[in-house]
Amino acid sequence: MTSRTHGIKQMTPDSWVEVSPELAAERGITTGRHVQLRSAYGQVRVQVLVSQRVQGKQLYMALNTVLEPVNRLTSSHTDRTTHTPAFKETAVQMTILPEQGESPLPRNNFRFGQRTPQTGVEVERKWANPNYHLPGDKLVQIKSTNA
Image 1: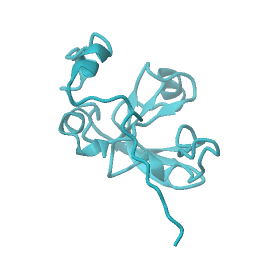
Image 2: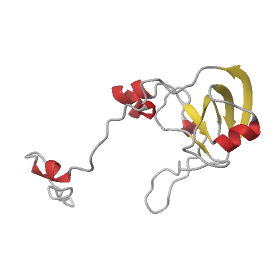
Image 3: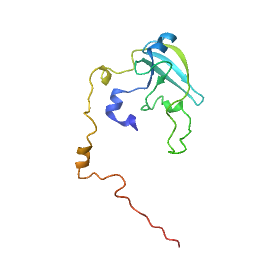
Image 4: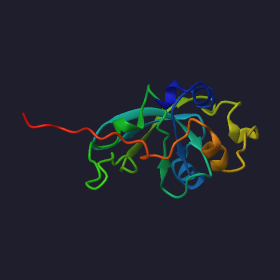
């Protein structure tokens, strides 16, 4: 669904994996290098973005891609209490591929200094909207009859 949002698709048209500078130096990889990530559940082929946003041996992939989705690497397990997918983390093996390309981060991405900051969650403005109602205050009860 996120990949259908024009603004997000424009700023992040493709998937990539963010690799810490420490891990990139250890493995001898740079931004733009293609890698294969393999888990017990599947594999993806993506480009590397060396980034301070991750540290140590951690990798990060966003969820907003269709071509090489991170969900290929995750299990179908769910949290027993909330019944939400357990997509937050998984162990992967990273294989460095020979292809080297340009940075996968488009020049119009906010990380290049063109942020659109939000001053905060403007809840008062949301609550003042005449079409807004508190979640759960307009619940409909459906009565069933035993026939």
